Image (cartoon, helix red, strand yellow):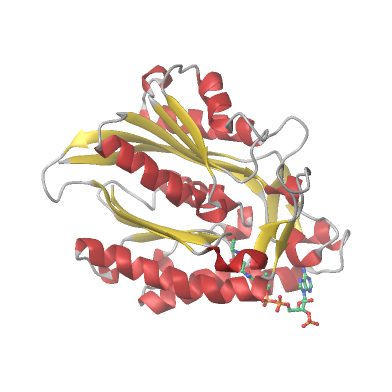
Length: 321
Ligand code: UT7
């Protein structure tokens, strides 16, 4: 059977670090409030010349180097983002150009914070059906550009960055490694809880992010616990089989609550929200790359990716490395 194998990962962060104390100089907040409610201590914010495509390209280059794969052999690039460089063309095509690979498939996927899971599921389907052989799957965002910097309830929560993985189709025997199952969901009922108040077809402006955080939190814990169970059930595994959970990094309290619901010890959950804050579609591959590079996640491990975001959209993917 054909399965998609993760060959390497990479990430990229803007140069500028903004601490909670820096934000307390701009809006009425405090390091204490932000750390206690979210676990966030700092975030990276894109400066002049740093865009979603430049961060995505750097992350992709690092992933290709880790995989020791020639960029010219990549025939599929899927970039998850809600903050593209331009309304069109797809930012993925600019990454393709920068990487020096031409003629393959390149497009963006838009599922906000779940974007990387949607991109991963799409790439996996395309590899398994033979539409492509080698893919770069990227989550990249510059949310700082759509934040209302006067709104303390949202501006302290997000950061910029990019993460990428290289996937390759491989014929493996039953029970072999690779992406074992991906489950994705959406429910358009709750748009007003998390959205951007602009867009090309409505206001003609880019708009700013608006969120009712407390309600989003409530939905996130329920939806994530459900989709994690559904993904495990699809392959007949238990939560106790999981070596690492790599969750979307929105809030340390959501990570704790989800781990508790699954009966997983907190040590098995990769946490980077303290350093990166919420980087939307970038957060899962960024956190994965951190834990691969520091030696926690190793070949053979069973890894669960999960995310929930605007739409609502949510999903999970179980991978044997
Ligand atoms: O990535 C997509 C998914 N997004 C999420 O998963 C986000 C989920 N939600 C959350 O992470 C949390 O709900 C937040 C971190 C956004 C907020 O935490 P909370 O414990 O739900 O706080 P709250 O919104 O209920 O606000 C509590 C109080 C309010 O004051 P009052 O009304 O009790 O007087 C807020 O005005 O905290 C106030 N507050 C702040 N105070 C200091 C809100 N933001 C701030 C702030 N600094 N930055």
